Image (cartoon, rainbow, N blue to C red; front, side, top):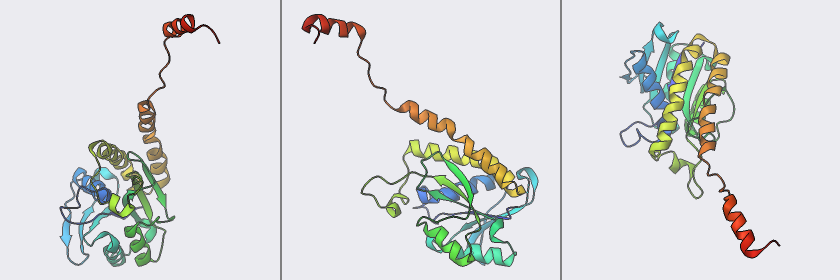
Length: 224
């Protein structure tokens, strides 16, 4: 069962639309959909709300750290410690460079791939056993550092794809809160397949030479 859902991002208007704030985007939408108000709690250095069952199918804290990304672990550690929440009862939502926009994946533990927010959380909790919901934002283009890339706003097409993956993720979060992580994982991991097919269709097709044109050229130059 998930008792704490953490969205990762940077506080402040200058960051709110950047790729690194994808975790914020999802948790904010989840809170609105379930009538949860996220209030600033100085004790935990975060925006905090609590769900009490209802349509989402379980009770959980929602948390948006208000430290910068590389200090995200402190609010998580403080709230989890205060309410005796184990690492395996925590779901961290974050941006993922290894997936294209439109892809969302759930997993437990694993490497942090240089993500500063995850690095701090793992160090503070002294564990990698928390769950992660990874929202693809795509790889940076050649010559662009990952740190610079995630602090940029995605173009409209990419943002639309990320929003679609967030929508898919919102549909499985009730299962996560109820403890059916495997079921949520299985469902979510099939939802972005149509998006991949759409991308394939966008690839330019090789132009076929018209039959009439071929015949004309043969009659003009003769067969080789």
